[in-house]
Image (tube, rainbow, N blue to C red; front, side):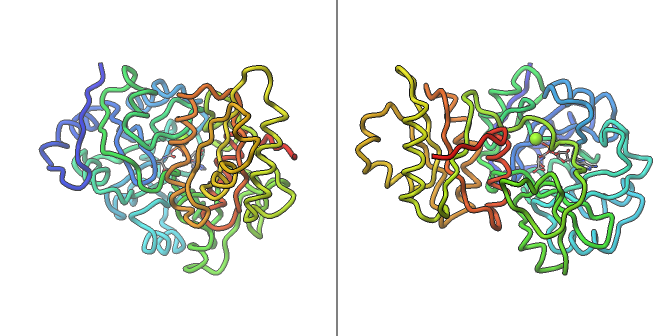
Length: 366
Ligand code: TXA
Ligand code: MG
């Protein structure tokens, strides 16, 4: 059975965390909140504990894990060298939603890195997560605490739904602030290469370095990325991700996403096209587009479930809501989710990356 606790992420005591820290040190699996998404943690130096993570999630063994530390100096035994670039990124963005890839030391088991000679490292900003890792006294490997392929968990209840009975403990520490997983950058060279976009945007990285490259896997023809392109290197990129129960398609608009009347028109056109018999259509869009949809006569005639990510003017709000909304659709009768495409600059790059994956890169025009 899974041990469960609700712990206030601001007002917790060491006494409340100790039992879970001891479980981690003893090779058990413990799910805990971070500022990005919930993680499923285990001792990164213990192969049996690591095997339990892959088993609980149903995760393919060739997808490497991120190692979480409580302080920057804790990475030293885990890496071959800390590059000047890594030092700079850590100084600016740690603690926070930035994962740094460096060459690994022999202390890191192959199961963490899926046989790669690099290791992914992150120091979370979430106070409960950091204190838990410090008390455990070991580096903590932690993938997102969802069943492999499902939307990442941003609430304790999401973890319970996906992993109850499959892990040793779950700590519910309330909603995750960022709501999207960390930005993953390769920092082995002289400039960062973004392997997965996230809360630390390319624009933010460019405030501290002169050049940022984007992995080729992120720059599809449908979906522009950064300026430089390299060969795909993040193993996680090839798997199905973030899938709600109903299939999701992205509505391609001929005009910019800012013209919300156009976006609403495209969404309704696609809903009418796909609506058969009694089927309920889902629509995922911005507040602004939802407001226009509500005024359209077609909306009243269709069995629709409209959910909003938030205001187009508050991308952080949309990011924080994304996985929650995808999971909420599972509780509705919607058999297809038609999704508004968002602007892909700054945080929009990470948002669209997750939506494109959730849709399996299925786009449709009106
Ligand atoms: O925000 C986050 O990063 C969350 C929280 C819990 O910290 N964790 C998370 O872990 O998202 P996970 O396992 O769901 O995603 C890790 C990603 C995968 O895409 C994986 O392929 C990539 O990081 N990764 C891990 N090690 C790597 C390496 N050595 N080289 C390239 N990519 C790596
Ligand atoms: Mg994940």
